[in-house]
Image (cartoon, rainbow, N blue to C red; front, side):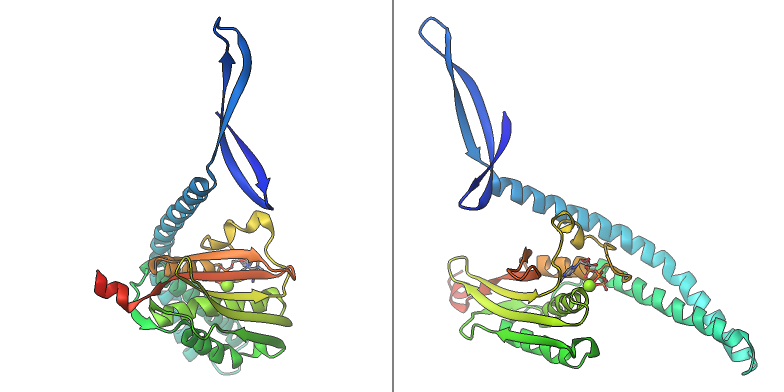
Length: 279
Ligand SMILES: Nc1ncnc2c1ncn2[C@@H]1O[C@H](COP(=O)(O)OP(=O)(O)OP(=O)(O)O)[C@@H](O)[C@H]1O
Ligand SMILES: [Mg+2]
């Protein structure tokens, strides 16, 4: 048995190949027979499973570490604050203590994010319009200074079905995508946010496309791992997003846009009232 990758209509297919000898009536080998089975879906499913398990394990580890760090951090912060209170206002140590406080607060933010990530809040499901969630997320980013030189185009499929989702959590995922896009484009460029309905699969898609440098092929798998970051940030945004979408029985897909930028898609099952009544 061996594996072979064949490109069919521009798409890579992975085949599991089996080759055995063909013999004639006297047992003489006169050729070989090769059977290839397309195992692409199987392999992709396996990769997704491994990825989910890896993320779950990392999440547990992260939660443990965050919990341990939380207490000493609170100690550092309260002692630093009381030193600051005691210091004369012209003391040369004022600035140093303020730096300690600022950096400790930064650590506390990271720890909070980690704990949020690990808690894996169960979504509060409601029947919501995906377009409404997108509009609410966009309203928030319009106010952020890092978006002032970014053109945001929005294409919403008006007749998209509703989804059963925790609107706040999905909004958080969209925000994570938008902020990542802005960072990747160094705060200048174009972001396209769209919603679509894949009728055959009964899936609603929310996508965020940017005109940044895109994601190198060798990092595609890594970006969802907690702490993976090419910036000086915590590297939790996509790990948290992955967890949220998974708990909504959806998936996140990443692709490269024709511009070379990144496209992040949230794929969620559409909700139909009639199906619930039938069940
Ligand atoms: N739109 C994008 N274009 C290019 N690279 C991206 C994009 N989105 C994410 N990435 C890459 O994926 C990495 C992980 O993203 P993630 O959101 O998990 O962490 P982060 O943005 O670095 O930190 P945090 O979200 O915690 O502030 C990023 O550091 C970046 O390298
Ligand atoms: Mg991020």
